[in-house]
Image 1 (cartoon, rainbow, N blue to C red):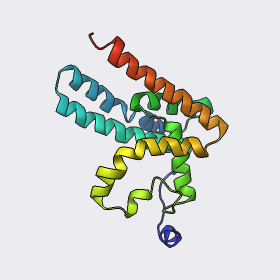
Image 2: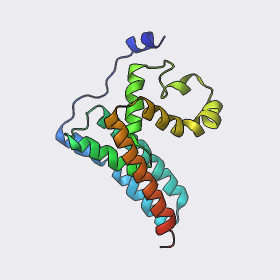
Image 3: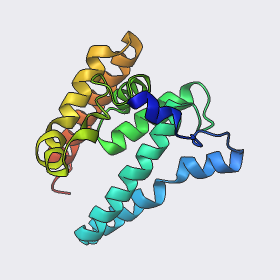
Image 4: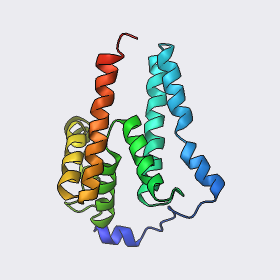
Length: 174
């Protein structure tokens, strides 16, 4: 069934971008991050939550383009982009990359963790699959990735733990 669906869809993503479009894509999440930090600073937490959600969604858009080398970055720029977004989004974007590329290879098949919830009811996704997804996501990536990606996943996870430690134990009273 997945193959039939894929053959009937005309894909229009991942087209080439000009330098101006690449610059816009590189900066697309910045206003949302700044808005989230400003709202939190002013104790407007509902607005901070909304801006954080938009930051996360635009960040996922950026990492998707990095996975497919469509953002216009070269060499280490892709690794640096994934690392910075990993630190800001508190998750390993290299693990997201591993699972996303598997999604393309095994779209809607049992090996596709990204597409696994496509056949679930909304309440199953929210109450059962959603809470375990981040752990399952990182576990599957570490199980199936290359040595190079495993190295980056561990660096990003260690950085996330360091950031959380600094936030909750070092800077909490400032």
